[in-house]
Length: 454
Image 1 (cartoon, rainbow, N blue to C red):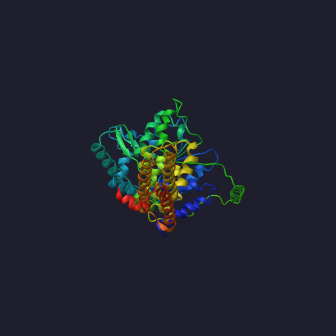
Image 2: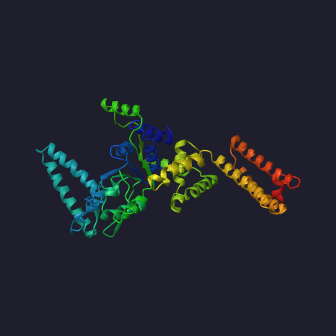
């Protein structure tokens, strides 16, 4: 089974456990494939946490960290606390002992000797072995203490700095003391304590909340930076379809709810990420993304940083769809990347659908409208008493400009349908040009010839 099919099997498996959460489940997959962070906004009881936990439980070997945040949550609960042994002269921090292979060998030998002592207490040999190993371990520990003088060290065992996948529920309930550490962790995958900076292996942070902070409130404005670092965002709703609600209820009553079936390993996920990065992004797709950016910026704020980092999401969507390169429809996944306020979603979705489902049609319509504007301007100039020859010359110049845009677009045509649309556009433009030429007493010439004369 290919890596893609394995991921699709996990997605299908999780979708079978939750109703009407296909969009969320796909975004969880895209977040993991792109190492981005995902925020889920929804009322309590909408299976936000369940979907996240169901997905991450299917990644074998991935170290997990989960925490419900509150104003009382402190930094130590997330990132670990100072190991007191690292401050006491003559002591050795547990982390150093765990990393030392020789000490671990002696520890295993001690465990074996202790088992022998418990199982055969009447013999002297196990007891003597334990005494000898104890002396060796103590001597070795003192030597390590001499090599490593007291220096503050954080014990991160079981905490966020050692997790591959993190889930932070009610993320905006964190206090100011935790905020700065979270910002660095989400953005740079690093954590600093006592002057030492630790790299964090976390692939993705998942966060959930039933509300978005009021960034106009001075007390909540500080959370804007945290919100911005959650690149992908999904809104959940209650289950709409009655049949699906009853199906979920039936499965719960029958004890069929939950369980793990399809799964992937952490190494497989890393290989998937490599495949996603290798998906080509054609120049035409970058141009389309830029067109979308310009269109959205009329009403929706989209930063340059957002735009310049759009492509991994499109690559992940293309990979999931089995495309050999990013296609226009893969940009539909940007719906959950470009919005800042939930009220932005309808316009973003409508714009993406219009421009991505049939982008050539949208561009052809734009050029047809431009050509019609040129014709309308010629007619208006004539009615206003502008010298006919002067108005006609301007018409021809502008029509040739639109034709050149058409010629550039025609080079990007893919398939018979797009070529048919372009042929119809050219026919309309040629007809408008012919009518204008004849009306002003000139012999019509193809727009291609007129363009070559300029």
